[in-house]
Image: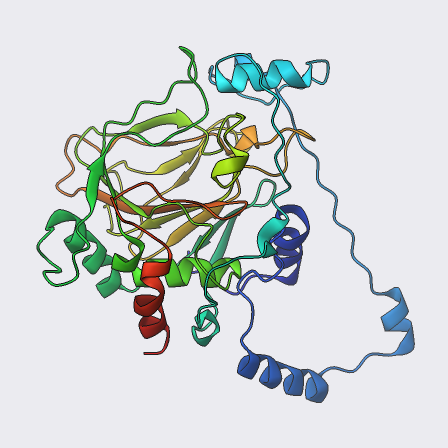
Length: 361
């Protein structure tokens, strides 16, 4: 399947539900061209104008979190569950009083330097994999050469000899769930990178979501999955805590970029358990080199719950017979400014020059 332009309806949903009002915005020059075409081509009668309307309705299924990580073929309604019970089950412990802001804070004021991200063209090859919750694939995200560069930087720390941006191999990422049902298991290998070492990834990720800086992004990561390696069912959203608001707040967007192709039948898909439709099979996204998977783990679903349990997903095990490794890059966007912790000395500001140079090429 070949991706195409995203429809106005999808842009509206991304803005209204998830708060990204400048998602994949049209740059000034292209906007002027579009306006000229609109004036030349569009004409409406009065009756057409007053009769044209659209309505969109969406229903959100909710389920008890004790059933979340057990096999299921349909979503169950649990409106009688208390909100605090859901949070306690989700985080694997007792509830704590915390306040999180809406993901609509995509335009949160920032102290970072405004970057020339608008010089990059908007993306044009989208596939809508699921509408509610929104799951998108962007097929023209990274070039083949850019993917190869990210793998080389990870697999060979001496690849970029003069930049002093060697990645740091580190343990598992934080995910929701600590009990026997919801604890995630990752058998892959993860590296944390300096922002300045991956200007192409940081620039394009911010351009896609309509940001003018990178200071809300967590540390960029690359991950390698070898034969039989996987990541079991988990949520990207973070469990509520008193420290969450101090460290950038909730994760409001997930971006996974596939850095290598995997042949069909080799496993390695990203699977969404509850989004596969009536068949009961999960929604599977097979690795396609250069494409990016985008979804929003903290909005939608049960009202007032700080994460969307419908985005439960897993990294399918790579086949025992696969001759290729699965390589991805991944990023999470927080509600407010995030303070990186790895590798040592990593800062958003240090990437300004590298990103500006990349954008102006």
